[in-house]
Image 1 (tube, rainbow, N blue to C red):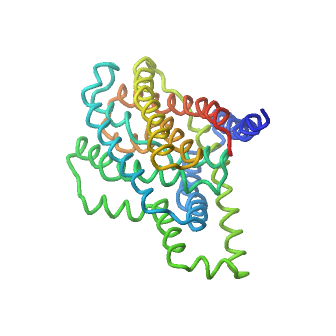
Image 2: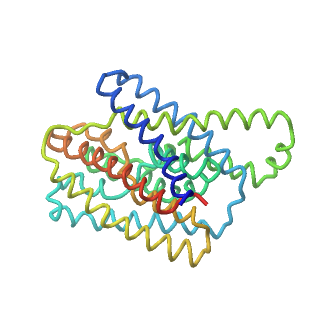
Length: 316
């Protein structure tokens, strides 16, 4: 019983900070400019610091690369199939497929997973995330750009992917480990100081993200029925898929520990990528309300679902 209570106690601070962020948002405490700068701090500094530390300390087995490959394929399949599902949700046909796949790991997933399962286990979540973030960069975003503006340049897509701080941090940590530099440096006093600095920076990720998410959590006036149906269909697809993949592929075939399985399930309950509204320059008011309400509603569902997930599968 104590381990379940420990898991609950670890997730409660995230909920409290998100609630504080929501209250501050209602008071207009943060300006849009400040929120944008805080997001940049997370994406460019604190999250990469946490990921580099997580990946530099472990040796990733090549056989595990099958995980991101399968997740990429699953995202692609759902993306194609969901183009035929929009009538079921009575959703905005143009944006529905983009809300059915892809996951907001950067601004939510890493924060809640690290808060409960520890910064040292972020590499497990990062390995799962690698497949979906590749899909978002190479399929989802280019498709959205092409559909809305008719422009799509592969060179720009590759450049954006390679320059992404999260990808650079993951690859940097793996290369630093595989090259033997980590073994050479780990016993040095200077590396101890550097590691402590990175750990302090990485530890800022969860509180910052919780405040940001709470501050931006608002539902636009308008019908919630279509967003609710979209979120329901999304969960109906990804939760059973995540359960099957975590039990069979991750647990039985690869024989990985429960934290890997929990990382898969955490990904499965995350909301769609928060970048989608950035490409909606010519969207109608109705379309904007649909997308924003879907993202907000999905975020609330994620936070509630993660409480049950962390209690059901507490840290080992």
